[in-house]
Length: 215
Image: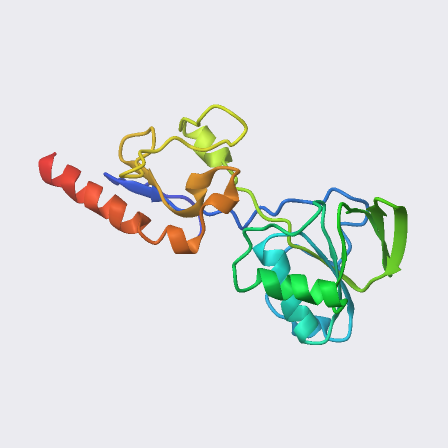
C-alpha cells in the first residue's frame, strides 16, 4: 500500500498486539547479529553454544527445543527459580533437564556484556565469562501505545499502562473504537494470550450488532 487515504467507518477495532516491541536487555553487545529477540527454528543452533535469557514460557520452550536439536544450552534467569506458571507440561520437563545438568542454568543472575565469542554473566558468586555462539533473549514484549495515546484514548492509572475498555464489550474510552487481543493487557503481557482472548471477536461483534441495530 502506497500513499495515504481516508476511510470513514462507524466502528474500528485495534488488535495490534505487542510482538513488534521486544523488551531489550540494555547491555553492551546487544546489537551483535548473534543476539535474537525472536525465535522461529532450532536448526541454526544445532551444535552451537546457546544462551537463553528468561524464565517464562517462551524461554523454557526455546531452551528445551534447541537442546533437543543438539544445542549446548545455558539459561540465565534473574529470579531464584523459573516462573512457576509455565505451562504444566513444560515446567517439570525443563526443571528436570536443569537438575540432571543437560541444560545449565544461572539463577539470580543477569547478562552484563555480550561479546562476539562469549558472554559475561553476573552471578551471586561474581562475574563469569563463558564461550557462546548465540544469545536468545526470550524476555517478552511490550505494546506500543504511541498511536493510542495520539488519538486520545484513556489509560488506567498506575504502572500497568492498561488502556481503558469495557470488560464485556471491549469498547475503549472512545465510542465506536474497540480493543482486541493482548493489546488490552497493558504492560502485564502475561495476563492475556491467544488461548484466553479467542472470545474477543465475538464480544465486539455482538456489541457492534446491538448498537448498529438501534442507532
